[in-house]
Image: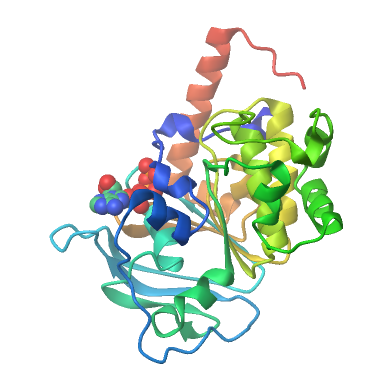
Length: 306
Ligand code: ATP
C-alpha cells in the first residue's frame, strides 16, 4: 500500500510561490499588483468549443530574455487524457501550466487548444475553458458556500452540495457547527491544506472546464487525507484533459503519459512502467525516492499498516 502514497518531495521538489495558490488571474493581479503581460489581439475571437486537446509545439520561454527556462518543449494531450509532468525543482514544470493559462506569452513555438493558437483567442474564453487546482489554495474570507460557488456564480444549493460531495468535502462541512455558512479564510476558520484543496476541487467541478491543471501538494499527508484527495482528484479529472504537476506515485501510475522535464527540456517520456523499464532519470528518481522513504520510516519506527 505504501507504494501508492509515495510523495516525491524528498527529491527536492521545492515549495512554490504564493502566486500559484491563487485561483484566477483577476485575483492574482489584484493581490500582487502585477502588470498584465499579455493582451488580446485586436478583434481576437473567443476560443471555439472543442473536446479539449492540448498541444505544445517546440515551446520556448524565459521570464527574462537572458535566461531561457523552456527550451523547445513539445507534447500532445488527447481529449480527456492525463499528462503528468515530473522533474527536479526549477525544471520548468509550473512554467508550463502558467503558459497554458497564458499568464505569459511564449517566445517561440506555439500552444494549441483544440487546434487554436492560444495567442490568437480572447484570454477570458481561454481561461474559462481551463480549471486550475493549485497546490496551496487561498480561500476568500467568506463562507464555505461562497468559496465553492465562486467556481460558477449563481450555482444552486443543490449544485454546490453535489460538487462538494464529489470533492469529498461535504461530510467535513456538515460536521462544522454552521455547515456551509461557516466563515473560512484568514479571518475565519483555518482549514488544513488538504481541506482547502478539496474546496478548490469542488469549485473546479462547478466550473466544469474541459481542461484541468493540477498542481499536486508536495507535503506528506496522512493516509486518509491522501485517499480522500485522490478520490476527489479522480472525480474532477474524469473526462477532462488533465495536465498534472505530479508528486505522487498514485498519479503517475494512472497517467496516460509522463514527461520528465529537466533543465527546460523533455528528457524522457512514456508510461510509468515503460520509464521504469528504461532505467533512466525517472527510474533513478524512483529508486532514490523509495530509499529515502524507507529510511524515514525506519527512523520513525512507523508501521504502515492502513
Ligand atoms: P518546482 O518543482 O520547484 O516548483 P518547477 O519545475 O515548477 O519547480 P518553475 O516554477 O517552472 O519550476 O520555474 C522554472 C525556473 O524559472 C526556476 O529557475 C525559477 O526560478 C524561474 N522562475 C519562475 N518564476 C519566475 C518569475 N516570475 N520570474 C523569473 N524567474 C522565474
